[in-house]
Structure formats: structure tokens, C-alpha cells
Image 1: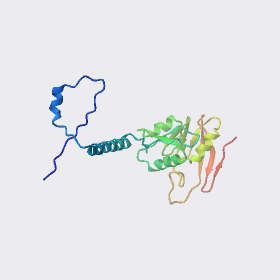
Image 2 (image 1 turned 60 degrees about the vertical axis):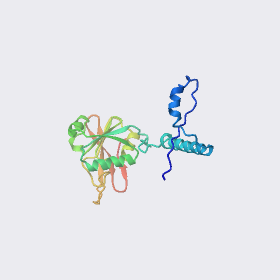
Image 3 (image 1 turned 90 degrees about the vertical axis):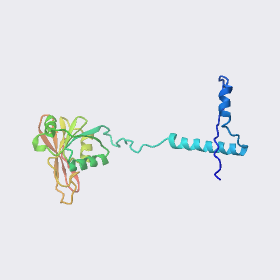
Image 4 (image 1 turned 180 degrees about the vertical axis):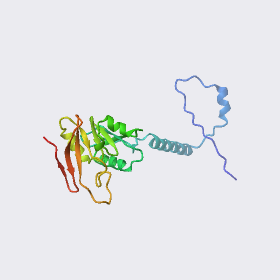
Length: 210
């Protein structure tokens, strides 16, 4: 025979409350089963375990895995990158910058050429993506260490830096094809440009004037 199932009602005594209606009490009295002391103690232990488990599962502090880590370099501002949504080498360059400690906000403008024109990047120095940081423009696949050098030693009247085209071996253009040395140019506020650095497979030579 199946053992009967008993319902236990735990009803703590009210504090400073109005007297209980005897009629209402008599209606539920028949449903209260008085259990032996050992059974009551068991129920108390089970209740405490359930409450403790609930507290640990739902109220214990948790760590947000998506917490943004502050960049470790002195350039704590977020770089704004303007690019095409389908540009894979642009995404690879952003990854390169992130690994160097820069944070980036990506924009996909409908007219990227208009952004370049507004920022003063002449067609001869244009590449697949354009970035801005600290009121400077950075065009193309410029190495992160070159940008860090530029920001630490800001040239007078400089508007930014540019690497024209997509040189093989530059950040974001890392392929199995042979590395080709390329030049980083300094864009000036008057619209002119001057050589800033030459990047080869082994080192970077800075050409800026003191």
C-alpha cells in the first residue's frame, strides 16, 4: 500500500498582530498533522539547507566575463575606426591594435571616401580604413608601435600618419607572401606630408625631424 502523504504547515506566531479568528483556525486545524520531534527537526534541517543553497546560487557575487579591461598604455581614449563592413584586413589591423593596448570603436559609414576627405587624407595616402585618436588621423595599416611613438612625441603642426595602400607584411596584411618594406608618412595641418618612418621586416627607422 502506498504510504500517505502528509502536508506540514509551518505557521510562526504573529508578532503584535490582531487575534486570529477562531472560526478560520478551526477550518485549517484538521489539515495540520503533528509530527514527532525527530521528524520536525529533520524538516528544519532540510529547510535550512534549501535556504543556504538558494542564497549561494542566486545571491553570491558573480564575475562578469564581459567586463571591459582598461588599456594598459597611456592612450586610454578609444580609437574610432572607419571601415567597410566586409574588410577583413581592417579587422585584422584592429586586432593588432587591441593586442597593443588600444581600444577601438568601429564605424561603417555609407561614404568612406567622404570621411577621408573631411579628415584631410589626400587620395595619394588613402588606404582601406581611417582612424582617429586624440584629434589625429591615422590612415591605413600603421604599426601600433609607430602610433605609440607618434603620440609620445607629437610633432608640431602634424595632423596624423598614413600608410598608403595595403603593403604586404604590414599589420593586418600578414600573409605568406614576402615582406615588403614600406613608408609611414606624416600628414601635416597645411595639407603637406613628410616622411616619418620606414618599416622593414627587421626594424623601424624613424625619420621625423626634431
